[in-house]
Image (cartoon, rainbow, N blue to C red):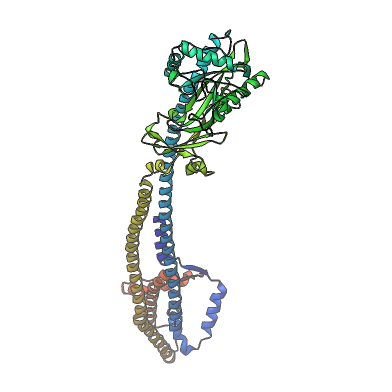
Length: 576
């Protein structure tokens, strides 16, 4: 910016520093001038004495033309200078706008990067914690399954019960922070009646209260149908193609689902079917033996536990891991999975989805996951928009290789919301933008003051230059004109003296009066030359001076110089 101002002021004053033009002259021009002078009449030969001054003086029309050219030049220069100033102001404004935008952009990006880093760190930590909670809760399936397989490998299935089942399961649940679990043996159709007698006999022997697992129709394996007119909406299930009645539950005698055939419930049947498909795949060699055939069904909304998924683990015999003899059944409450939410998740949304199409959304408020609802209509905007800058962090809760291939795959995604983004939004970008603009404004102000001071000094120099030029023109008119008249008078006097000397004596030798007159003429011409030199300064400053390079007769120059001192030398007795 400083260099731009310097360039503008340089343009204002460059006309004061222009060098004179050098125009070489050849001998032909000199000879032509001599021939023209020789052709003048004798009576007008006095004009030769004023030849130099006449060449230096310009007619009024020529002077007016030069002034018009100078004025036109000054006008063009002034327009160029003001154009430079306008360009300079435009550059300053553009620079201010660019710096303001740049400051806002940089600071906004810095806030965005900090928010992204914080979000990804917090979200990844929360997802890992959710997955750990999920795996711990489903680990109870495997523990109880192994206990049944190892303890009752040679038992007569399905007539198998575990002594102290509620206490054992309670210990497992406490160890792994699991959920309530149930044991369901697989009963063939021809075993149903015998199994019912075995179950109720075992309830009586175990001290369970009288009437436990009784329905409106009496004792037996039952299914549920809400279209029935009886009080408990139950029916005696004797016609199912597959029986998985609940024989033992972690709640003991308090559990109302004892002797219910879970196969009749659509949600439970989907979970059992996925487990059977995993066992069938193992039988065909498509699934490795180390894969736990644990399956999770789609979620449903439980009034007390929120979105819940039913899980089923198959019980197989150690000697034949493709034959299912029973199931361990439990439920996974996703709100229990998220019961420990970091307070840094405040302002985020948690989206649970499955490959079967389930979808649930929670908002984190005050370190608590608050259920918003199920379905895509509750998805946060950032989750729905494609190409969003921050779409969220996702993690599969039940990774492949641990659960059956037909089990529902659940994914939890943590998504930032406007509340979270606003918590990282500050006024720093606006402050930075305003600060950058103010810096440019202050810079423009100081440079404006500097420009005003420089223009003031330049105008003063210009006024001085105009005064000098006016003074030179005054000298040209008031001083040089009388000197020209003196030169003309001396020339006439010289002619008269020469005529008198020629008529009186007939001697061509010049007298002392003639020599003195010549000396006066030379001195007068010297004064005119000095005045012309002074006037040339005006031409130099105006850039209109042309120097003529021509040959000089050194001997004539020496003779003229000697004649100037001849009278002084004679008075002192010196012969030059």
